[in-house]
Amino acid sequence: VTDAATPTTAVPPTLRDRIATVGQEHLLNFVDELTPEQLGAFVAQLETIDFERVPRLVEEYVNAKPTFDAAQHDITPPTAFAFDDPSWNRDRFYDRGAELISDGKVAAFTVAGGQGSRLGYDGPKGCFPGGAVTGKPLFAMLAEWVLWARKRFETDIPWYVMTSPLNHQTTIDFFDEHAHFGLPREDVVFFQQGAMPSFDMRTGRILLKSKGEIATNPDGHGGSLRALHTSGALADMRSRGVEHISYVQVDNPLARVIDPVFVGLHAGAEGSSAEMSTKVIAKIDPAEKVGVIADVDGKTGVIEYSDLPDDLAAKRSDNGDLFLKAGNTAIHMISVDFVERLNQGGSLGLPFHRAEKKVPCIDPDSGTPINPAEPNGVKLEMFVFDALPLTTGSIVYEVERVDDFAPIKNAEGTDSPASSKALQTERAARWLEARGVAVPRTADGSPDCTLEISPLTATCSEDLPGDAMPREITPGQSLAL
Ligand code: UD1
Image (cartoon, rainbow, N blue to C red):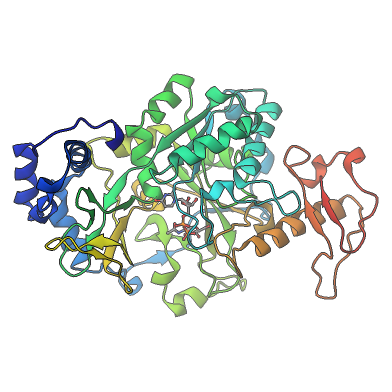
């Protein structure tokens, strides 16, 4: 936006007034020092800020720290369909989902606006090598699921990729370099998420990154629900006849980007309003750091692990499972109608979440650069799962962990390249063993090899083509199928 801004020598009076009315006039302290080009770009940036909302945001999220007190709420498990529960008819939902996909009513959607900062990777996270054996980039692994579904269901499936201003062009260039991973260019649609101003933690003043730019941060994956609308992506979906969006995060190479059973459950299961559904994995360790899906005062939503009291996290049902075991994989089905409804009236109605961060900035009085050693700023983000309580009925589909979930978030330990590799290998090992292939395992039971199976080869053990299967795997072997 700012690149195309018109040069100017003055801040428009209406903008000046809007800024002054909400007590943020420090933002204009250095405008006299800017060139017409710099000022034009700054004015364009300021025009994107919803200043009228700023005082409430500061009061609610900067001066105060909203807390969730579980004891004040009635918390119960959500309506769930578990993969190992024979009481529901999986085939029926597969057929329902397959029909919707074949009819071109389902689009793939990946949120890829975040920075790989926890991973220590400098670049869009989707470019990170995720394949256990091949080192294929995460984007390529997700693209293969879209390619598989297009072939399997003989239909064009558009793939929407949300970026942020920080990685938009790099992401597009990466797809160009890789010829869109074999997908038709017109069926891969990129759009950018919005940004929020970052605030001074002590004063509630918006931070200046430089004399002619405010400090901003991406508005969180919840911002996707607004950006889908404002970018025109939703209108593009409508024009293609798309009714449901299959939402996955870029960090999970095992995510089934298009999953017929999940589509069918979302669209047709009892208890589902077909607005927004969630894929979950059974939480086994009470301390595992995933949000849990729960019904809170009768409304389905996510309780983040940091908000879940230890005793409730550890509470067990009669069968020994955790009472709240629906661990959030961040894989959702969302209807186009629902996203449209959320955007009516201009404001999404999702709450913000605050994070205290070190934000490089300048002193608004002297203009001196500040490189903080301690968190000085508050960043506000929306989370997509906060839309769940706004549905009129939401269900969860519990899948087996190794089948769908091997995220890469951290450089080491849990949710790292190493743990993802182990899970990708374990999934492949189980599939091969189910077909009679001997997989070497170490004393602790883990595979003594590295394996990776592309969805283009198989999406489950029954799919594995006889001629693609090795007769045996030797200890230490690396094998990609
Ligand atoms: C998230 C969920 C957690 C869930 C876990 C599963 C939150 C707060 N928590 O954790 O409940 O159990 O995933 O893996 O989200 N992104 C954007 N734009 C943004 C911010 C993020 O596109 O402004 C994208 C990232 O590129 C990434 C995804 O959202 O694909 C996840 O973001 P991240 O902040 O890493 O969430 P987690 O803390 O890992």
